[in-house]
Image (cartoon, rainbow, N blue to C red; front, side):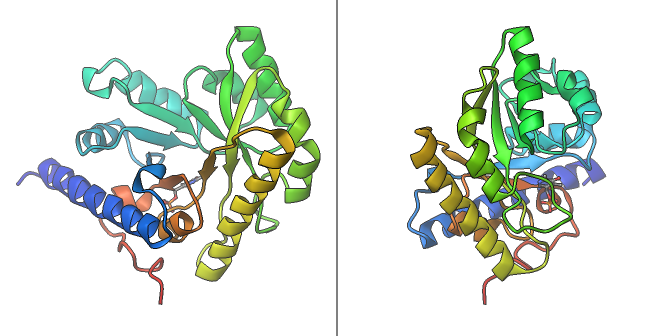
Length: 247
Ligand SMILES: *Cc1c(COP(=O)(O)O)cnc(C)c1O
C-alpha cells in the first residue's frame, strides 16, 4: 500500500474506534449515543490530511489559529467533497483577528472574556450576522488556562446573552493534563455550571465542549456534547485509551 492509502486506512479504522468509545462512554452514563459529537482538531495537519479525514468520515474540524483556518478554507473550501463540512474556532482569539474568523466558522468555542464577547458581537453586528459562540470557562482554576472564572461567568452571563451579535450556545473548558480525577471534576463542574446558568438566563446552553484525546471518555461520562480530538484522530503514534482508561 502507498503511504497515503495506509494513512487513509488508519484514519478510518481510528475513527471507528473513537466513535465506538464515545458511544460506550455515553451508554455507561445512561446517555443517548446521538447526544455527543466529535470534532477533528486539524491544527497540526495540512489540508491534504483534512481531506483524507473527510473521506474517512469526519465532518467537523477545529482550528486554533485564524491564519491556519484561512489557509485550510482557501485550499479546501471549493471542493465538492468538502460540501457541508464545518470548521470551528477552538483557540485563543485576539481582537485584531476577529474579522478573519466571523462568518467563516460554525462555532467559536473560545470566548474567554466579556471584553472579547463584546468585540465579537460588535463586529458581527457591523456585518449583519450573528455568531454562535461558547463561553470558555476556566473551571479547574489553573493559572495557565484562559477563560472566565466560574464566578465571572455567573456575574456576566445575563449581559453576555443579551449581546445582539452573538448567540451563546453553551460552555467550553479544558481539563488539567495527565490527571483523570481532576479532569472528571472539571467536566462535572462545567456541567453543573451550565445547569445553574440555564436557570439564570433561560437559555438552553445545550453545548458542552469538553474532552480531548487523553480524556474524552471521561468527558462524555460527565455530560460533554462536543469532544475536540486532535492527536488521537491524526497521530498514528497515539495509543487510544492509554491514559483515559478507567481503572
Ligand atoms: C489542540 C486542542 C485540542 C485537541 O487536543 P488533543 O489532545 O490533540 O486531542 C482540543 N482543544 C483545544 C482548544 C486545542 O487547542
